[in-house]
Structure formats: C-alpha cells, structure tokens
Amino acid sequence: MSQESANARSRSVSVDDTGVRRQLADGSEESVTWAELSAVVIRVIPEGPWKEDVFLMLAGSDGNGTAVPSGDPAADALIERLQSLPGFDNEKFIEAMTTDADEAYVVWKAEDANAS
Image (cartoon, rainbow, N blue to C red; front, side, top):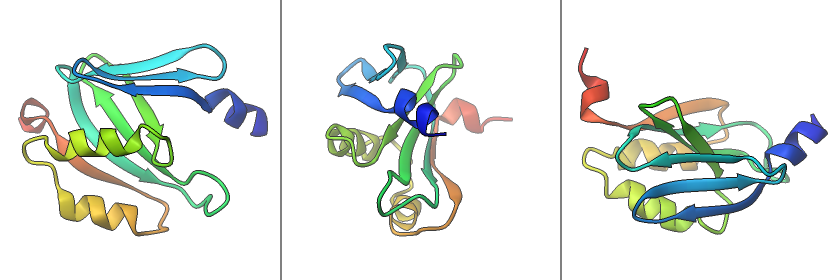
C-alpha cells in the first residue's frame, strides 16, 4: 500500500476557471471541468492524524474526476469555489470535515444528476 500511496500522491493541484487538475507523482493526471462536474463527495478515511484522511472527490459526467486531499495547498481555493455551487450542502460539508467516521458525504450534485 505504501507504493500505491506514493504513486497517488499529488505533485500539484490547480484550480482555475476551467476546472480542477491534479498532477500525480507518477506523472499521470486527473481532471474535471466545471461544465462536466456532476457530484462532489467528501471522503473521510480513518488514516489521520499522521496521514491524509479527508479527500474532496469531484466526479465528472464524462466519467473523469479527481480526488484532492484536503491538506493540499490548493484545497482552500477549491473549497471556496465548491461552496459557491448552487445547492452546495454546507451543513453536510461541515459535518464531513469535523468527523473521523469512515464515510462518504455527498455535498453537491448537479441538477441533471438529481433527475431520475
């Protein structure tokens, strides 16, 4: 698992008007555009406090997406941008960010994703 963790470690995360891109240590890239963003999930895993334990998971309607560690330097800008999404559930977000439960919290879904 330590090799997996090393490969999954971010080299850089960028948040801009187009979307979010995460460059991984192994050279691969994960990304999602704001136009394709379909869901935001806060994933909490019982790894803290010495390892990253909260991830901002962004899913795109095209099957792409990325998981940004909450401790990443770009996370504050990302969280600010996410909280401006219409219908973003700030109460659920606060709950997710203040728990150590092994759980996933859906804090936002695109309107099209809610239609059944």
